[in-house]
Image (tube, rainbow, N blue to C red; front, side):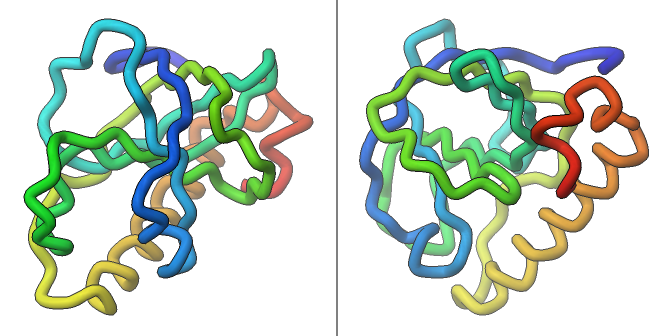
Length: 141
């Protein structure tokens, strides 16, 4: 990978479980490192968990579509991943921007956009040929 925008270290905490209900479970992070100086938005990321690397997509922001007046959250959806990592520490390399965070008219519009975002991130990682460096966890990207 040629460059990384920022890296963060955090512990996976229990969130509101909204991502799970819309088909995109997320690892909500309690940040243990310096906070990244990035715009609110969606990013392609590589997650290091117990020495293994996994591709993912992360939202940094306030989740305006849910209008819950929440604080800034850091939520990672790991692609093709189904392990329980609650309370685990992970490192996240923020690799590239996908789009700015925005308000959607309803949750179904948000889900459609998340599907497009995931497809874009998978394609970008394939284009970057990151899978050749980490064969174990990128074969399904």
